[in-house]
Amino acid sequence: MNISIIASQLNLKVIGDKNAKIYSVSSHDNPKPESVVLITKKKFLTKTLVDSNAVIMTYPEFQELLLGNNLILSSNPQLSFAKLTKLLNNNQRLDYTYFNSSNSSYVHGRNLNLGKNTQVGFNVVFEENVSIGEDCVIGHNVVIHKNVSIGNNVFIDSGTIIGSEGFGNVLSEDFEWSHVFHVGKVIIGNNVMIGANCSIDRGTIDDTVIEDGAIIDNQVHIAHNVLIGEDTAIAANVGIAGSCKIGKRNMIGGMVGIADHISTADDVIVSATSTVSKDLKESGVFTGIMPISKHSNWKRIALWITKLEKIAKFLNLKKI
Image (tube, rainbow, N blue to C red):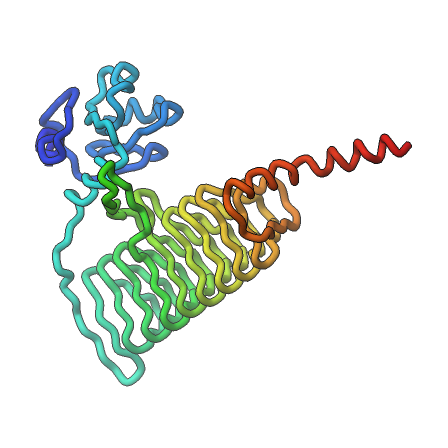
């Protein structure tokens, strides 16, 4: 598909070569030729992006900063990008092959690679382009979507879904949601344990990654583009929002909620039921628990909480 066709269907303006071909989308961190990159902030306009030969979808006011690049201009580039992913998304019906034995029963799409001594339970579904290493155990009723790579000695308990579509949506001016179709992968390293009924979403553009040695309890949700560092342990009912970077050897307690785009250092411990709403830049034990209230009240409370230490020091000085 060339960009003039895309622009015509989305009612957008093209600057540059209107016949430039587009095969996919890519991220501003990893721009690829013949792809579309979404740019909504000036800080993402790097030399790597400008030199990448990618088509840039952005605001009209950024046009002068990108002279010489092929551009698709939109007053709402996030919404236009969501609609673009729908145009590029391949919704063809998958061609499944059925396998039955006394030990397992599963269906799979094209290019399934199962390593030696890997055991598969009943009612398992593998979509296309799935690779699983040696000595793995895939429990009953597991679904592994397309473009998932799993290393050696990985245990996945029953009911878990890996590579599901992430929760990426853009709201239009008419208050209608447009879904961003996810084209990234899920990559799971070696010696990983994943509990029952977990959901691990594939990346929006770049990949969701779980590194070697991570252990994940039951009913954990890991959203799109998340990185889980080596040997990290995650207890039950944790929710990790999109694009978080969890460090190595973290220990995350039960029912913790981590907001999107959060990073944690190595060797961090987060107490159970905490809410993590800012980066944790050094190792240690962290707790974030407060009762829910109206947001306007919470902002005032939070302001005073941040000043408590200074107030305490001031009062101590007065006593002296």
